[in-house]
Image (cartoon, rainbow, N blue to C red):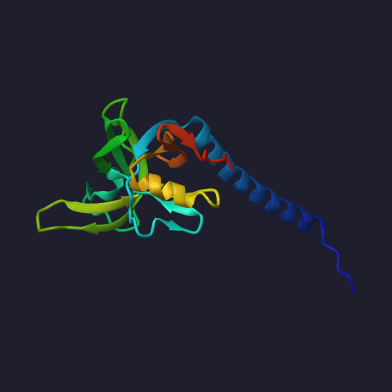
Length: 191
């Protein structure tokens, strides 16, 4: 026996399908918007582990501003979202000057950028000392075309590679491309 759906059921199914399509379109639009109109900064890449840089078809990237423990607000715990204000020290070099639990209203100057990150771990060296944390920004790995890993591994070891980052107005950040010896390679597709 075949049972037919009522018009109300069809409307409900169409509404669910439309909501799913809108959610997917929103994610794609957010990524395209960030990569196309986000503020572009260059950050030097440092080797994370020279014995195991590649796993499959992606490279693990480290940044000076992402490897140091930074002071975080009291009450911060692992998994919290934080906003790190970075100031430029020189070409491709950035330093964290402050970390807040919400997007800062004043970033300290037009040259500074704010990155949204997730707290990996929190420590306190001694009672009365500020909390220190390691923050991940979601730019610590980058997928590369198959077969290009060995050449990039050597460039990372020689410190001849930089990441071109796109920073959005809300602190979202994505790797836009890699720069090897002044030449932009591996441009990230918008979707």
